Image (cartoon, rainbow, N blue to C red; front, top):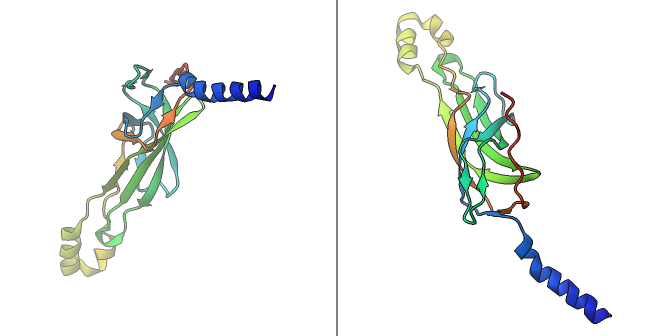
Length: 170
């Protein structure tokens, strides 16, 4: 009896990978759309925002991940504009894309800086030094709909069949 149970266990372990769902290999490219407007004047480090898969992705086994899956990004650094022409700064990274209950970890970053007004600050210091501290740099923003390219950060096995993307809230 023990031999039959052991053989059954071995057969189940060997057959398991054959019944596994499609694999998203590390490095798979995704076109991601930022779904929230972000600004250096309002964002804070650690804030999360929504992203979505913008284009279908065809995996090597023929499985297609349809556009519309949602995911999450995070603000890594946010700095408001400041006195003496100091510019705003905003850095974000994409964390994951959710397919059903599974997450595909993503690798993607984007950073932006506002316009520095050094010339205006220098001219003001020379001509009107008391007004110099009131010259501010510009904030920076990442608009809703901004496109980013992201890559799968590790191999992920998805369930079979792959669940469809959530219905659009629009």
